Length: 272
Ligand code: KIV
Image (cartoon, rainbow, N blue to C red; front, top):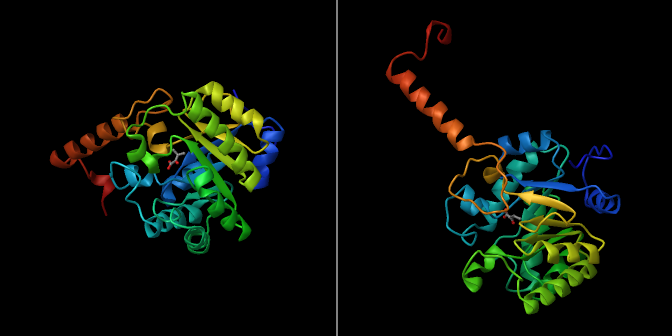
């Protein structure tokens, strides 16, 4: 079991780098709204990611592509209002940074100004290097994201494990070094072989946070709704469900329906 070694009142990008240096694993979960973010932050999470997975989880889209910058800012500002301790990282959504570095900077500034988030995350390697540098020059911390990058799903064609072949693995290692050199404070590695993720984590001094990337990295991230079992149709091997909220909620809601129909609710104590 990974145990926090030091009490941190407020997590910053520097705290995460210190955690890696001290061998303390980093915990990260997504949140997209005030109520969930309050619970997640109060439970001692280090990083809250306002992921563009909100496109799937909150809006029911098949991919992360449709979510807009305005919608990300709405989710992120709700999360920021709830958080007292965690670092809040906000995804730059598809279409808000790919065309050129100036557009990337404008989008990152909007996120920081309008949501109050603490850092941004974007997907990709060498193709987004200039955008990363431009954002960092404005004083905005950037988290990279390599491996399975869901915004490129139509290029990949499937959500299967990435970088199993040498050519892609070599490119991923080069991209990770580039992200570190460019000044990113951390990198997410999604769905790649555990041995490759470990090698990457050992080759850079910034934290590497994995999802489906094994235990040899510096921290783990999961989508909150998957981890608490609110979503129940998604069964990737890397997912550990800590609750079955789908079942618990369905049971509770059907009990409520029954109580209303049978006039058991409200009872004498539950009225004025
Ligand atoms: O959007 C998201 O939730 C993410 C995580 C899967 C890392 O990017």
